[in-house]
Image (cartoon, rainbow, N blue to C red; front, side):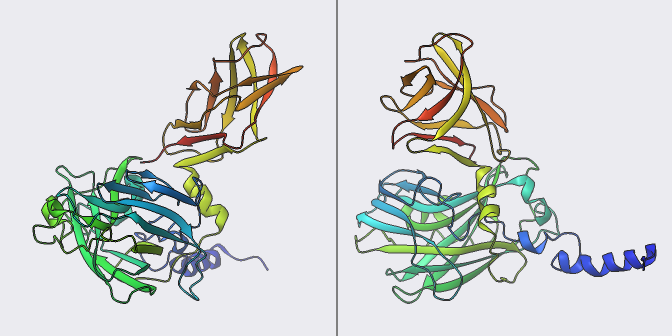
Length: 377
C-alpha cells in the first residue's frame, strides 16, 4: 500500500535523529564523527618502515607527519602490535635508535596530523557556541610518565593553542587515554581547504617548550607553555612508543572508535597523497611524443586532491620506457603540467627520442620506480 506524504514525512523525522547520531543539525553523521583520518594506522602508502629519521616529513602511515629537531634518530613503522581484542590491525611505532639524553633548548619531536578548515565549521569555533573536543587513543611505551597532547589553531592571528597531559602508567602495556579540550570561543577556522587545525602528540621537548606553565585552556601560543612536563623518550635506545585508535570528536564523551572500510579510509587519504606507481613493470599510462624529444602522459587521479599537487618521484637510469617498435628508455619525468586537482600531464624531455605525433604507453622498468602526487597540508 502506498504511503501518504504525511506518513513519509513522519518516517523521515524518526530516522534522521538516529542517522545524525543525535538531535540537532550541528553533528556529523555517526559514520564520520572522527575528525582524524587514518586513526587506526591502516593505510601506509609511503611504506611500512622508515629508518634513520632525524628530520621532519611523512614517513609511513598516511596523514601522520613526524617533526624532529635534534631529538635523536628514529625508526618509524606500521606495526602489528595492537591492543588485544579491540579490533585494530595496526599501530604506529616509534623506535629510538640513537639517543639524545642531553637535549638542546629547541629540541623537539612530535607526531602530528593536520586538518582543513572547511571540515571543521560544525565545531563553531570563534563563537560562544564553540564545541568541546574529546580525544581518545590507545598508547603503549616502555617509558612511563607524563606526555603532552596539543591542539593548535593555525588560522588564528596570532596562533592559539591548548595542551593537556596524559600519563603512561604501566611499561609495555596498551592503555586507553581520553582527553577533553574546551572549544575556542575566540578564534574561528577559515572555511577553505587550507591548514587550520593541528594535533600534536609530543615525545621530546627541550626547555624552550617546558620552562613555563602548561597551557590547559585556549590562549595565544607561548612556546614555554606548550609541553611542560613532557618526558624525554629520546634518552635511551631502549625506548619505544606505539599509538593507534586515535579519535577526535565533538563533545565531552569519547565514543567507540569509528572503523571505516579500507576502501573508504584509502580514498580519504588519497585526497592528500596519491601513490601512483611503485615498482617494476607497472603501467604509467598512455601518451604521445609532442616532439622528437618530449613525451607526455595524461594521468587522472582516483579522487579529487585537496589542491593542485606536486610531483614526487624516484629517479634512476632507465626507470621508464615507451614502446614504439623499439623500447625508448628514459630516467625520469621532467615535471608535470596542465595541473588540476583531478589530473595532470607527466612529461619527459630528457633521454627520450621518438617521432612527433607517435602514441605509446609508458611502463616502469625498475623495482625502485616511484611516482606519487602530494597535496598534503
